[in-house]
Structures are given as structure tokens and as C-alpha cells.
Length: 614
Image (cartoon, rainbow, N blue to C red; front, side, top):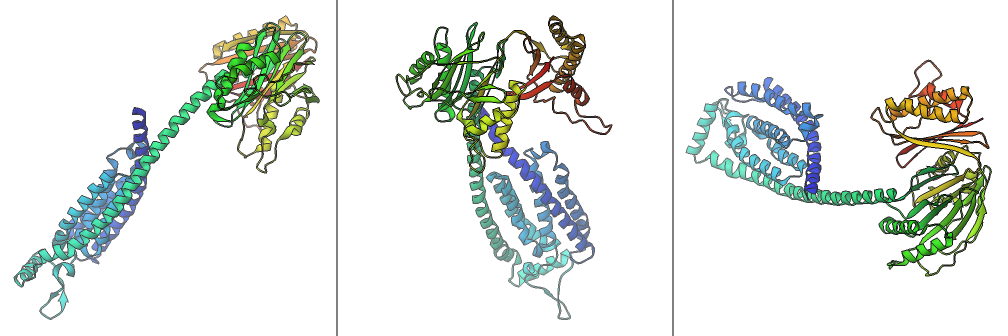
């Protein structure tokens, strides 16, 4: 409740600050008008009693200065948000209107509703009522003061003065006006009462009517603003709850990047809404086997997300050794059917890979066929399609086999990719997906992952995302590998320790001394950039993974950090002698030393992979 009140006050004062900013500009216009009127008095165009003339000559420049004060605070947000600031603006305007109606009563009547109109911009009926009452009281006071001190007004005196020569003129002094009014009273023409009845009351009634109409609009606008603020508060509350749900869902998923000597896995889920129904997961069910799952729940939003969480939980409970994929999927089916009164379902594909020999056993429960293969030789995995989970008590599911060779990749994906649509309504489609796989030789799984995302983005462009997009790729290394990984705190003081970690691995693998030295140059450049430009010397996690394939003579270095999005590989080296942007020349050296490199930013992590083939 306190948060609601605070948010309401914040939004209200935001509106008030904006109104103050606009009103400050209006007071400048009023200030200029005051100066114009002052000049008219100065050049005797407006005639007033000589006794009052010095006061007017000083009064209007003073009012003009007061009206100009708000413009000096128009860029000061703290002042604009002060509750008293609106009274400074309204007060200065009322003062100007009062002075104008005393000095020029017959030319200033239309200015009385002006302050009431201005008060409506604050969407505060109380402020409007205060301004109205001040206006009504000031009107009657100014009317009588104007009779004596302002420009001569025949309406107030009941016509002009007949001079001895028979001409009609005006009285020039205050005493002459007082004498004239006394003569009128003696003649039965009490101008004090008639001015009140025939001059003040009709104008006060018009101003009151104007106030009532504007006040009704003010109240209506105030109510609309209040309703909008409450709706905004509820929307913010719902958005906060959805963000919490999103965090829970994302944290339920496994790490977006995982690797071991035998396999490398990279995955990502991009929900169409705050939360979604897509899922992927992988677990080591024993020392030699990894189980890999992908799924797509019917529907979207919170119900789909809850069903997705239940599916993942069931998978982790039942994915144990000595079970086939079809057995695990059937146990998941039994679990998620309990309490499924909404009739939701999920399509799944589950594979279990032997990390030692690449043998894969898989089962498909109504899901899209995965893509398997190596460079320029990818294809859709053939096999039975099966039935989805969550509807049938005993869905017919089949276990099938496939032999992964060294360097082969297995990519599981949801139909959010193939059914992604551009503004013309065309689908990304399976053919375009397979063509992307076979379009070129990818140096790493990370490079492929990033390329696929770019291809989808280029195809879809500005069209809204209609479905969750999820894909996860496993690459089977096989062969003989040397592998090591470690996490460091990304501070300037820890850079030598990270370089020692790289140097020791290089020496253990008997890398040529010349390459080892170059590798340290690479590491120093990359680690320094992360520490300096990524974490800005505040420290943070830097994960290092080094792998050497003895059969293929390939070395891989993977660097993962949680700094701000920071692609070191995107470098613009100027042709002239001007200094390049961050890391420019250093990164160009890195690219010359290494044979391949790839970058991606996934779930708040920068992932950088470099490759060297001997």
C-alpha cells in the first residue's frame, strides 16, 4: 500500500512539474505584456490620475520582473517538483491581473478567468477553488480601486463628465472623481451600489460559471489521472510479478554454455512474452552419459510457464541411469498428467549421448526433428515422430539410435524458429533453417549459434515475435582431449594469475614457445579489456576454459564474463593516425594470431571463443 501511495505521489508530481514548466513559459509572455502596458503609460497613451502615475511606472516593471522569475527555474527539476512552486506562478499571474484591472479596468475584464484556466493544468480541484475565491474577492476590490486610480471608465461613473464648455471629458484627479461620485449620489445615482449590482455581479456570475465548468472538467481530468495512475500501478505490479516469474524460469534452465572433454553444449531461450512455454535441459545421468531434452508447451504466458517448470522438474527426477529415453518420457507423461484439468500438452525430444563413443539413443514425443551432422553435411534426423505428452496415458514412443562422429553436432529447436514470420507473413521454414546450417564452415558451436540468431533476426526484421524461440546444440568432440577450466575474479591484480593459468596449460601440451608467447599476448589483451572496459575495475567473474584436441591439433580458449555487453571482436581500425576505439590495435593482433573466433551475448553473459589450428 505504501508503495502504491509513493508511486502515486511520484506520478502526480511528475505531472505537476511538467505543468510548472509550461506555465513558466506563459508567465514570460505575461511579463512581456506587462512591459508593453508600461510603455503605453510611459508615452501617455493610457491616462490615469497624476497622483497614481509614479506608482504605475514602478509597479508594472516590478510585476514584469516577478513574472519572469519562473523561467530561470524551468530546467531545475528539483524546484519544478516543489509543491509551493505552482503558487509562485499562480500568485505572480494573479498579482499581474490585479494590477492590470486597477490601472486599466475597462480593458482588462477578460483577464480574470485566465488564472482559473491556468490552475486547471495542475489537475488539482483544491488549487482551482483557491484561485477562484481569490479572483472573486480581488475583482470587487480592484473594481472600486480602479474607479479612483485607474484609467477613466465611463461605465463606472455613469457616463462622461460635461465640462463648462459643453464638451464631454474625463476627470483627471482622484479628488475630482470623488467629488463626481458624491454629486451622483446627491442626484440619486449611487454609483457604488450600481457598480456592484450592474457591473460586478454579472461579471462575477460569468467568472463563476466559467469556474464551475472548468472545475467539472478539472475533477473529471483528476479522476481520469487517478484511475490511470492506479491502472499503471497495477500494471507495474503485474509486470514486476512477471519479471520475478521470468527470473525463476530462467534460473530453472541449465547454464547457457557447458563443456567437458567430450561434449560442448550451448543453448538459449527467448520468450515471446515475459514468460513462455519452451524448455530445454541437459543433465549428466552418470559419468559417461548426458541426457538432453527440449520441449514446447501448448499455449503461452504464465500457465505455459508453470507447465514447463513441471516438465523440467519431472525430467530431472526421472532422468537416471539404466533408463531409455522413451521410458523417461513416459514417466514424465504420467507426472504432468496429474492435475492437468486444462488439458495442456507438451512436445518433447529426448536424447541420451554416450560421451565416450558418441552413441546416441533418442525418442521423439511429437516434436520437430533435430538437425545433426558436421560442416556442409547437416540433415534432419530421421525417425518416428511419436505422440505428445500430457494427454494420453500411454503414448506410443520409440527408442532409436544414431552414431555421432567426432566433430558432429546435434541441434534441438522449437517451432518458434521455423514458424518465425516476417512482415510479409512468410515463415522462416525448415529449408531456410537447414540452409543456414550448411551455408558455411563454422569454426565453433558458438559461431554457429550466433549466426543462426542473426539469420532469424535478419529474416524477421521489425515483425513482432509471435512464439518462443529456443534451440540447444551439442557438439561431440570425441578423440583425445586435454581440458582444463577455472573461474577468476576479474580484477587488475588477477590478470597475472590468469596468464599463468594459460601458460601452464600451453607448456603441458608442448605448444611451440613462439605460440605460447603469442597466446599470452592474446590473453593479456582480452583479460585487460574485460577488467577495464567490461567491469570498469569493479571486479567480476571471468571463467576460462582451455581445450586441446590432440587428434586434430586444435586449441580452443573460451572466456565467459558477466560484465556489460561487450564484444571485443567488433573493432573499427581507422585508416588515418587517429586513435581507434577501445582495444582497436590490440584486438587486430589477436585476430592475426588466432585462426578463428566467435562472440555471443546470452542471458547476461559475454561468451568469447578463440581457436588455433597447428
